[in-house]
Length: 219
Image: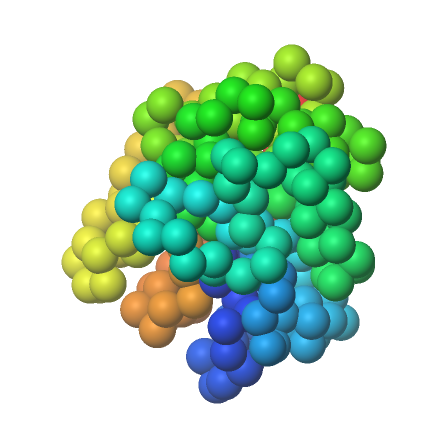
């Protein structure tokens, strides 16, 4: 069983975006809120039958003080501010039923911020996928403690934008399915990722691999 999430929808509306949305609905679409095309892309994905989640901007370790956008979660925020940003993001993308973090190496290490996020998501009845951008992330364990349905990413498919690298990561993913009940993989809106998924997903399904939405694998 494989849960595939494709991040970074919302920055643009172009042929590559439309290509992804014409693939079979074997992945969850993660949309960054607060960008010019965020609402349109989320609406389009929902219309085409894709599960949609928020790709929530969060503070990273090398943050230069420039906000990704008004929704960014940083450790300076109190609970009310965290809740308001999370609530507003879900209001902008009403089809989103959960969230994963965009960047967030610093944010997810901050226990208080993760507690505030967990309380917010519990209140809104949304789930959380930890993109696991830091080995010190407190997100997954905190979500579990607060009763928020959650799971954690195992594989990034396309850190390196080269077909050989993406195929190698895909092979690593398949090996993990032999020892894990479900493997969570994250890819991005990149041409190389699209080309390989277009080719490989039908083959893998023929071989018996099952692709699941994020909402089906959180616990």
